[in-house]
Length: 365
Ligand SMILES: NC(=O)c1ccc[n+]([C@@H]2O[C@H](COP(=O)([O-])OP(=O)(O)OC[C@H]3O[C@@H](n4cnc5c(N)ncnc54)[C@H](OP(=O)(O)O)[C@@H]3O)[C@@H](O)[C@H]2O)c1
Image (cartoon, rainbow, N blue to C red; front, side, top):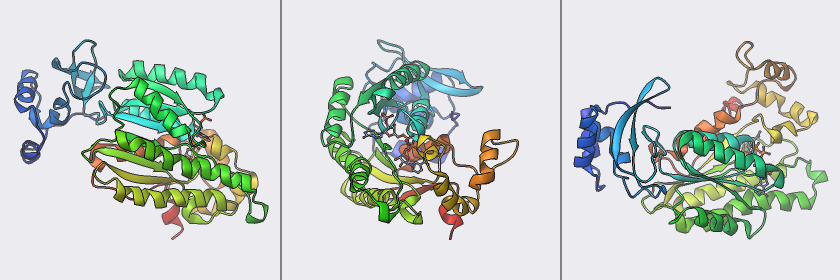
């Protein structure tokens, strides 16, 4: 969690010049009352949200100091129900829709966004994920004082995205989706001579048509001030030519192409970026055959951050690295990069494929 730091006088002046209707006097008074350093600049992007953040709570009563994890933070509590706004947690009062939130990378993204204060819609599809997603929602809501709603839809169907929006509208009114993470995905490996058209259609329905129709469904609910964020989970497979991944790699290349088009088409509403993990420890990765792992071993061996470290990485990771060539990424390592793109500090980045793969792509150049 970030510590709220005093702004320099020049950034404070910049904050005052911003063409937002800042509640400056209120901010100054509240900040001065608790001795917050250069309070207006420090807190302005939270304080302007009083009463208009759409978080479902009535905000605005008191600003106070709290110590979180040994670090000084500034919080706002008040209204009908006390709600903690931690200044410095940059996603407070935002609403994020994460697909594939039930497991793997999506689960880590969900936890990271929750820790930064975002309210969440957790999308999943399998009956087997229902209970764990409901438990996760309850835990995150209680731990971070946020609103977290599980939503179920099959994103391989044309009706899936609209169904997610209907469930979102029932939970958050008026609905504003600040952040969309298109994370749900599948991978079926086969060499071109063995390709089964059904696998092609299933892969493209989930990995390509699903995000496309979900973005279409989300557009009416995006912010209108460019503060929205769409982040698509691609893969190094889009550019590495991995044997057996003509279908999966092609689907991720399509997602990257759509990322660039959406970055232009939606530029008044949001930024649109993709991240491209390499191997990440998850159910998807564990399903890879030994033959496939042998084929990607040289790529792993050349990735600067994938060398396993005895005494630092878990013993099973160090052991696995002896045959796989190195350690896979951890879901949290990808989630941190997604959260970075989701925040206000990434406003000048759009249409990009951000490498989140321990240097695997650069390692092969
Ligand atoms: N793991 C890796 O090594 C790796 C590497 C590069 C890129 N990626 C990408 O990262 C993303 C997440 O991968 P992961 O490893 O975390 O996958 P995972 O552990 O296999 O989880 C897949 C997630 O997608 C959801 N999902 C699958 N089919 C769906 C459908 N028809 N409708 C809605 N949701 C569906 C699942 O929901 P249920 O739980 O409800 O089934 C689950 O939450 C994927 O896009 C993947 O391509 C992964």
